[in-house]
Length: 203
Picture (cartoon, rainbow, N blue to C red):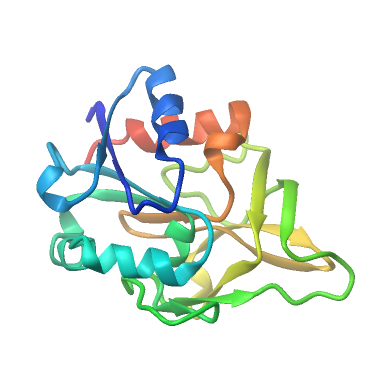
């Protein structure tokens, strides 16, 4: 098992809270600013909060765009919140590119019966299992966002949440790439269990 988890710091997220949760679970972590800082490069976390454009700009300015695209088969990557949106092609929130790992675009939540941004705890509806999700273990997670991933290939959607009479992707994946719309680092025991599951797979 790879015990080192490396967290990509795009300067748009409190990476320390994610690091602390992994270390409380018994994993070693390393916060990395550029690909040259990687010690192992097998288990990567791409977090982000705020807006898409600054995160996208940092992703490519710091060299992560080229590195991740060129070495896609060599690691397992989890994108969290804006990090999830960066796995797609782009976002309606602003200009900037994503990595294109998932055939999707981030779009504004539009619903007349619920407020935006969407903030709070939601139960997941598991659509299909992946190596990180286990419907018998996971239940509620904490969300804080205004945009969601609109997936062109619906088979990339592993779990959804219901909000304002609609359902939106909560977890997406394709091969060794996974994205979560919620914040596992703020989701107490459920988030801890999900991160532990992600960290425990052999790459």
